[in-house]
Length: 308
Image (cartoon, rainbow, N blue to C red):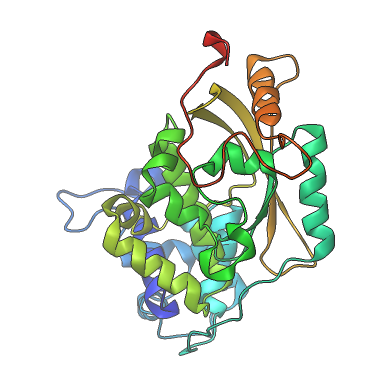
């Protein structure tokens, strides 16, 4: 997660995905590089080849907004990728990684997350390094019922969404289109990493997954950038079967890097019925707080069709 190498790799990956014909350039014979040449990007952006080369090599931190916008236009970057380019170019050169203190969750946010249970809405808060800082009973049962419910309250044991997607076989089975979930997760993590370039925990997470997951490594090296603000996701849940849920990821503006994730089903749909059943199954048996499926124990696979 070095800023200089990230900037160069990002620019090279973007120009490698373009073809001269797309930008009205004549393609003479066989090319030795994939996509556009540095010379072509520089020409279309209106800067010298030497200047663009220094920018791609991370040797200048004085590029103006106009130059960066011109390069973004040539590389056909969308708004998110354009902002990412600006963040990489403006990052502090040679900045050291910082070991931040464990993230804290405001009590009012914790109460809000829990309150969504009454509405049958799975809710959780994700920190800047994609740790789960809190989840309600329904979100826990939906996403990771095999883990301990109170794990987010212990900083050393907090589940990490990105790590779970790539390394936890239970979570992998939860997503019928696991490859799409992986792409969305890494594209979003790129955005986060660009915003927190000096975060040691993020760097450790990327390093760990690069060593343990070939799928993560391939996607990370692609340098795609896209914030996962909202989507519709398919689930294959081990207790209630198939669900189709809308997922909204909302930024908490007063809590640096923290986001609130909410899931909901189409009213009157089988997915809503499945979510209600899951909510019923997560209710305590009595006032002592015991639950039919204790956290950490395997959850039996059942479905709506067999009367679960």
